[in-house]
Image 1: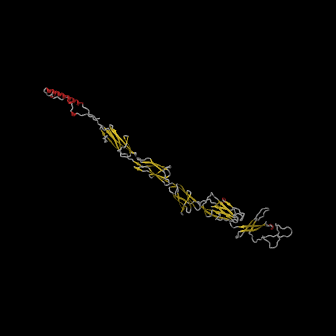
Image 2: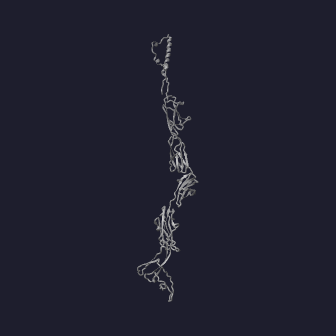
Image 3: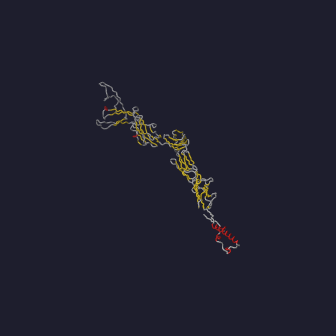
Length: 546
């Protein structure tokens, strides 16, 4: 717009109120004259605009590159083309020239804190953006996490301030992801935001997620266990620098941690019972690891019962040992050999026996180290049969001959000698006999039968060994009968008669002068009766053998 030269001019004013009347009046107006090229320019239509058609213009301004930021002002005269000055409209322009984008303070406005190490895999990503001019463009904010745009899933809070600075001077954007947890490792976020002047804020930050609990292992005890001691030397290992606590049944214990992460503590067991030892290790981020052991203090020895299926002497080659124990034990040993223990605590073992004395010891040890043992009665194994010696004696106690012929010996006594002292049962022909004071087994005055007489002697010792012996004698008695010989009697009587007759005849003959007998004189043989008379010395009794 060009102005006329300096001077006095009459100005026709349209649209201003003036005093009524015909008198003169004075109006004073401020006229701003700009020299040179204006920083503002209207960009309006260059073609004819039909009547009653809305139209508009754009205002363009151009400032030098070194224009200082701050409030800016100006104006434009706007009128229809070729219109008189009376139609010109003054357009005042005022704005703030702003080169500064919105800002964040990384020490307080960002979460997680840049370059931090966190253990929360679900930590919210939050950015607080500020603009002291109150000109935040609330629709321009954008948040990316690990390269993913999460703006639409985020909460945006932009409070309006009606006091200086008027407008939107603070914006908060927060992404919560309880179901999309961070993996362990590094993560990053980018926040973009403009102000009304178009200045863009872009801030990038990162953090590291570590949800891994520290290493923790209990080395003693290596597992839940038992003890009969009054204390336990507890040890564990964890990461160096961790904070460690140890408790026993909830009561804190004094523990020490070496620079290498070795944990040591002495756990006291005041009475029998169950003690739960818990150790907790926490790293600098608060990640914790917990381990525990249960130790049972038991000072009572197990109750052990055992018995064998036989006692005393035996000729068996083995015995069966059975028993039970009243609690869970590490093992049961029978003569040093482990045996299988049933769920109810019972056990069975076959023990081989050797000739002679056998000693059986059953022992056990429970989980706490308490021991118990049972020594069974000694078992003697004897496989040697008894020795039997037999004598058959007559009434005088003398041994009889294998064949008895005397009619006077009609009974025998069976005398048995057994040197074995453990013989407890002896029979002679099935009849039980006992050892007498002389240590013999005697069956007295056994009648003999004509012919063979057999005696069977059986003996059994306490071990069950049996022996048998057989003795026999033959009974064949001889009987002598002296029977009278009637022929000799008759002969004797005849001889007497003949003697008398001869005497009488001789007497008679002698009275007649004597002489030889006629028979003798004629040489006759003796009479038959005389011939049959045996001589006295030829007489012998008859023998009869029965």
